[in-house]
Image (cartoon, rainbow, N blue to C red; front, side, top):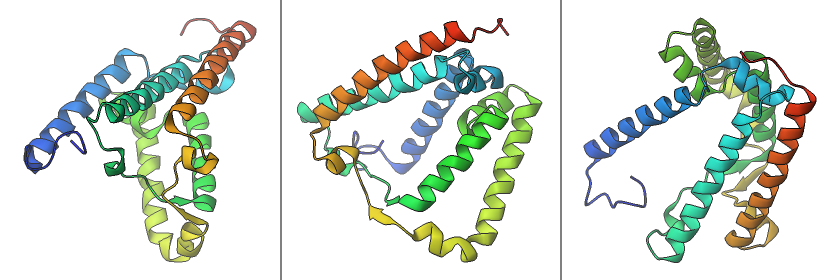
Length: 196
């Protein structure tokens, strides 16, 4: 359970079981929210359904504020949270590839597994594409390694890059979310689509 529950209190087996239970719960919530529908997910990019934008922004803000308050009360040590190292060039290319896949296929990796679990054929094909991409990347890694590792910037946090506190960053993200929610509502009115 990461920094919340020390390894001495909860063993590795329980850690895996809890992670599995949380994963099942997360998949259930995704399905109940309608995120197993490729139309709903693609609707975010076309402007007729911005529920995905709202849910993900809300989730990010909830987690961010939770961590900030847990840290403030001394319940969690933010220094124990692992931050992935940043490789700028490969991150940009990877983001473009994943974004294009999201728009074309109507799924992200997590929602595709959720949709496949309830029997959606398009999601199963999408997952097949994910595995093909993983295979080709792994096989081509020796050729791609120099580019993949280029632009190394270490484990960056947005607050550190801009030299602001976590609280100020949280305020900026909340304001950005409110603006995006309003823009999303305007887009839904501008490009309405019949219920699907």
